[in-house]
Image (tube, rainbow, N blue to C red; front, side, top):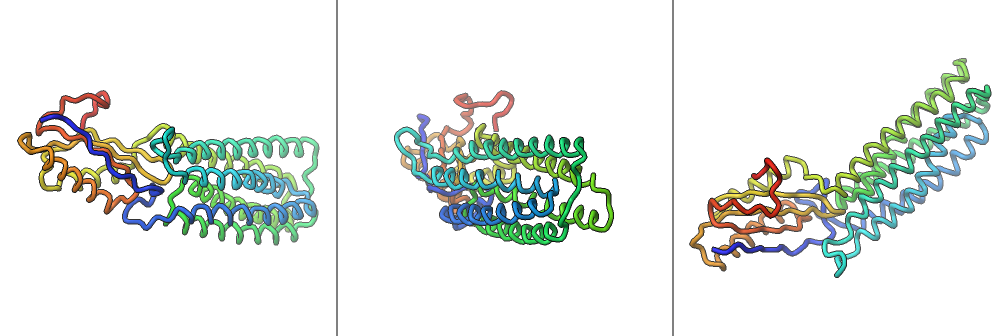
Length: 324
């Protein structure tokens, strides 16, 4: 029996983190990015005023972070819009991987802002410019910033339920970090108000910068995973395997490969069927397996290769030491 391929119809604009049985609505990602951009502009104005009034290095650190967030939010909006473009002659798999590229840009921007904060804080400490003036204004504004960041995280969490975009995931990780950072700043400002030494302020700013670098590292890893076609988590691979092997007519399965591209996942594997089946019968089995997987993973773009039972000698994409 000859080998042949069955290519599934791409369920466009569907994918990733909450992959299973999800009603995916890509516009939620765009709405989330637009809301984020608007709120960030408000936060920049607030924090600029707080820094003007207090002169705090910690407030300066979070202001720099928000300025970088604004640039990131604009790029996020553009990246999401581009990733939603349908496949064309030059991009047959769609444009989803632009989100991985954006994640690398975002992580670089955050890391660069963190380095600036570190050097500025050390410079202030060396010059002895550690005095903070209006503590209460800064404390109140940091409190408002926490509320705004909580609102953004909630919006992004809701968006991810319907549009699992890597750009939105990166933003959520960033603003979750901001909540912790702002709480820390309030703690330092309150402590200084009640008599803690002023040199704590620049050191708090440096701690914030290192936290920003840690966040940037996680975002960069996610972006690289998408760009380098990292396999999906084991639980998803196992579920796809179970769905396939429990299907009537499938006698074996091997060479499962998966990766994520924007708001969809790509799945390819080989199944083994009775060598005496007709082409039509084998085709029907493939189509039924495909439909079963799509019921649980509606974002999947599926490629199935058919082999006669016990014929696993094909090495089109075999990984050394791995042939399952």
